[in-house]
Length: 270
Image (cartoon, rainbow, N blue to C red; front, side, top):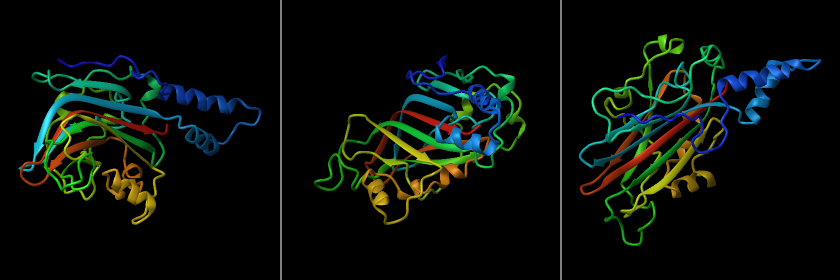
């Protein structure tokens, strides 16, 4: 069974579509002296008026120290048929199904983003907990000495036909495992010794520029996040058609990462 999200913004907040953005950009051309494209793009960016895609995966998965696990992979970013919000019920998925949800395709959506670096923000929402015991004395409820966490990596599509052709996305695309990459930085660690599920929200942007040893880097580490994930390179280096993969990790015997649900939302400039 695949659950579909029929609304663009289930949370009730407004998120513009590609069509909305293109229409607004045309309004700026109606002035007696039309604004130059570069200024229009700057205005749109300043308003955070971006297209987006999100994928929510609902399903309990456990990773132990014996091996890393892939929890989910996004649909290819900013290509035809992947804009909007998608929801997949991992627990009830049987056999080969197709991912449902998102926005209906229109002619205005067929063109991929034209900017060299179109991506602006990636947001991870993670619902998880660890095994509920272990760690150093006095670290309960903190990220200090925690050895279960999430990592994010990027995978690139080989075919460019996805950019302009509408596709049916098989659910296996979201879970087909490849070798776990050796990543130097974690998205977030799990609060130490908590059996109750905790909801974490992590946001990376193309404007992030955290330096090693800075107050911002120390603050990120205190939140259980690698400071390098806030240097902006992850978002700036994304390309049209990329997929973001979320990995579950745990180290040392007895440690576990219990993922209950995850949502990845990506925003890009049109």
